[in-house]
Length: 169
Image 1 (tube, helix red, strand yellow):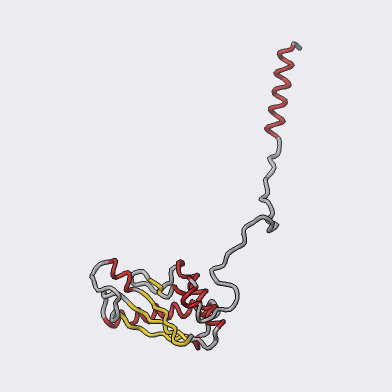
Image 2 (cartoon, one colour; image 1 turned 45 degrees about the vertical axis):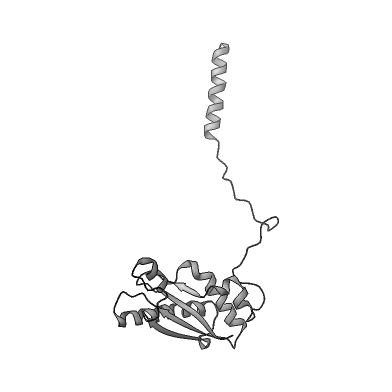
């Protein structure tokens, strides 16, 4: 065997060994909690006080907006639902009214029903987060109390809402 044949034989054996080698699956590193940022919660630790209704950014969000003809709460408002539910848990004497509203499109009866469904959806979300049903009242104003009186999508989107009104803090 000459030198060239030997080199080619060794190269082929190395290539065959590399092709047959088993790939090692990498495992993700285990999180030990050291050096990682703490998980932030939208709900403040500790008990809420009535003063927090005016100072806490989460509790100041008291309007929940809906899509056209929808009564499902958007994911954007889940943090606010958790904060208001915690407030109700922390303050058993607190009471709130959920005022359901609709835009001007649709019949009066339809909009009254839609406003009520929206108020009930917010009530259910608050109860799912630990709020008590005995602290919540739902009313529907339908299209009777618009915040914007123009006939365009910008105004209609402002009128499709539930307002959270604390009647006892």
